[in-house]
Length: 538
Image 1 (cartoon, rainbow, N blue to C red):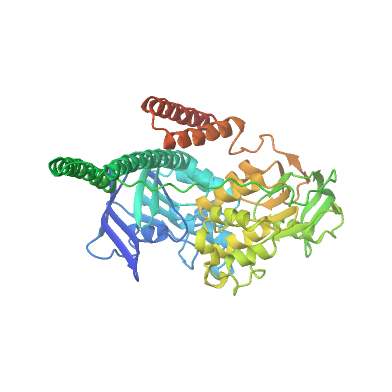
Image 2: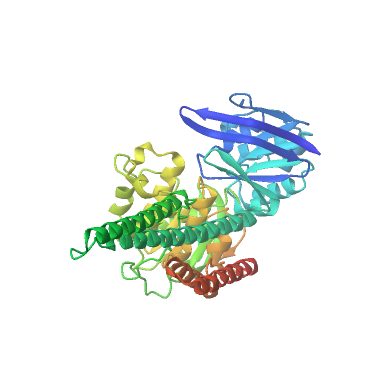
């Protein structure tokens, strides 16, 4: 049953068109995840669908049922019955006195307490801890109507959504399946673009060579020898002229064909992240960090007692637990390295990422801010910045003109590329879009040092953490190794396939033999199929 339709949606700010969507349909039971880079217009789209923001021009949205809308954090008061407040642990306090997590829970409770057929939610996991995210996930899965959801939480999107809307350059592109399926389809699109680009370059090169040969043959035609008589010379000149004209016309026709070729652009490829082991200051201590009966206390309040355990060089420790359990406090204690029971190896050089950004110089560029504290070559610094979506000339932007989310990424890059060998990260995925979060996963997987991080991001936890320290009020806890090893993006088999794919593409671009071309194209398709099968098994 159709619950919502939108046609000719447009929204322009200044000279920038943020949204242009011809038609969108939402049916009962739909679970739609809205993804895209920060600033692409995702929230604008949801506001238009929720009726909060009108479309420019003749665009309209028609809903066949009530809409419940969960906006991003803002003051929004409404009454809730006691049952719903208790279910979502909503405080009796006013919004001004609530924490970010409490305000988020209140907004969710307000939306779910209605009888709406359409639920539109903009970043509903903001400020929620793991338990809150899992509770929200269960509610969304069992929501009886249709759901349209913006989130950068990959696990939530995978478990809840059955389709994806990608907002890119103002357009809304639709994909079937969850986020993993969407990302796989995007990779297949990129592979196809690469193949078409290689074929285009090959055909262009073949035609250019054919045109060159025709022109050279035309130029090589000789004038009449001096020993020829006048009549013979005239005949020779006429014959040469005719041949030359034919050759020149052929060359012109070939060049015209080149101009008419459907131009294929080379898709952008992310460079692999590989830290220079010569530059990195390795640690040779057996233990980097150890806890022995550590207590976390804030004022008179005892949060956690008797934390024990240790980690070695190269380990990645995730500190988890509900809001208020003392995760950030423990990170500060490690940073100070003067709390009873916490021991940090002498060769340890710390770099800390937190939500405060005072370490950035607003008058200097992104590249200058990161390079100043980095021992790595500028090429590698640019590679990491490009993964965080600061590409080419964008690295020369001054930090002072960046958005809050962009500044967070610069601060992250500052820490990741510092001269430290132990990183302390407090909620590093906050304010990052899906693509930037995956880039962070890639960098942390490649990072040769030790990482201690606080997170509620399940994908980051599962992909990076080798050890977990769960904190819970009043519970004795210890560092434990994850029962499932982190999911590495590329194992040896996948890497081998990708290397052969690159070699095959390279050969395709230079071969002129048709039989070899057919064989290479067949091998290319086989390798793609192997890569897809491997991705499904991982």
